Image 1 (cartoon, rainbow, N blue to C red):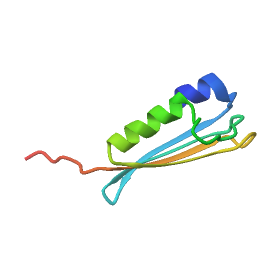
Image 2: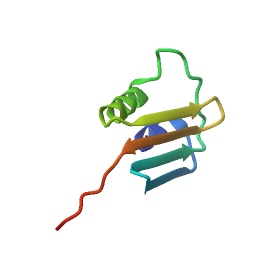
Image 3: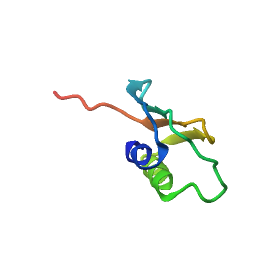
Length: 85
C-alpha cells in the first residue's frame, strides 16, 4: 500500500495503524493523495495483489477511494498469538 501511494498518489501524508483485538490483526491505512475512480474488474494489480494476500490469510479487506479523496483501507486478519512455555 505504501509503495502504491509513493508511486501514484501524490500524497503528503500516510497514516498506518496496526493493532490486535479480539483475535484479529487489524490494519488501518489512509493517505491524502489524489485517489482514483474504482472501476469494476480493474482494481489494478497492486490492490488485487493485496486482496489476494488478505484472502490467503482468511482475512477481510474494505477499500475506499474516489478522485481527490485519498485512499482508505481496513484489513482484518484472524490472529492467535503464540505463547512460549
